[in-house]
Length: 81
Image (cartoon, rainbow, N blue to C red; front, top):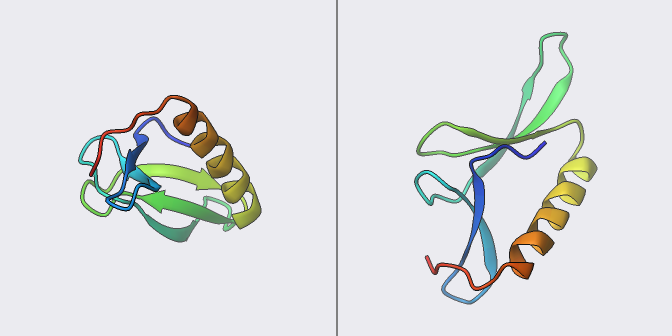
């Protein structure tokens, strides 16, 4: 699930990158354990420490981020980094 602080910006080379909407820093991908020991795949802002997304699998993460990127591209232009 993508959280409300995930946004996108245009990198210097023109590609879309995901960033934290609070501080405009690109996220880190990591994983962690949930309450019952299940593995969760996370996207975190390294500067703010905000969770930007959480998924049950890498495939679920990739699908949702791909759809989110399509939505962001349809609302171009982006602010450049």
